[in-house]
Length: 328
Image (cartoon, rainbow, N blue to C red):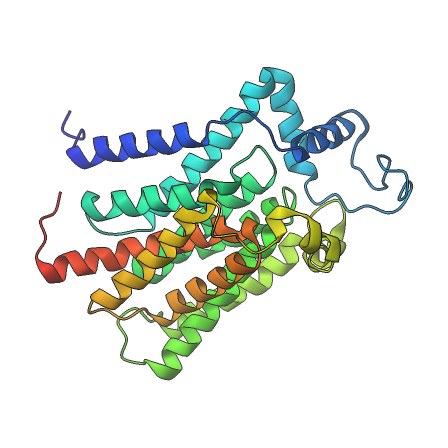
């Protein structure tokens, strides 16, 4: 019972709320397409040509979500729609728990930040492969956090994680956005803020660069080899996505579903304006970069939420310390 502290109980309740928020029966039409592809993979092996459409039948197809589709089909076979709902809720809760671990401060600051971040990210919590990208984005953010702020070197977990990610969803590109953004932020910190307390020493920066380079190679460990690297760029080049698909369009802030995102952006600006601590260069690059992605495509709001929630919690904790607010 000694471990049953107020903060742990409250954190469990908060994560239970996240689980409940994410427990949804599938309504997205893409779900059924992924299930059909998963069935094809389970019964006939890797998909290498298009056998589903009329106009592209027989064309070469790099199915970047093959692992996630096989997993979704297995859950569908075991538990139907409820299995898919459990898939979504579990990954959403895992992701937000990792964001919680990458945050700092007492329950009074981390709790509200966590709920606001979850509400913002929930806009596209559906049983699709992108849920695995959400959880893996949070895991990578936590690995970068402990390397930068806790002095624990867990970076060598990144290359195998990226290999797994590349077999689940083309969202592995988000992993490289975080890695390269962190690398750029640390280099800028050394060049422009050498006395900063949060700047990673040069050996750590070189290790991060090496891990990023190795990850490019491990990503190619998939049924389609190096061709997987081109998939994110090819997807961004499809004009019809930006023109006709809602999730690829900029967020409409008139829609209630985007209001938590707007509040999260506002919260980030407020804690930075009121607090005495500056935003370090890595947080600036990651927050600015993911905010740009979110404002250009609604589907990227969840990525921004993962990054911004931890930053808001850290700076809110600093603000609470400066003002002498009580801790819980």
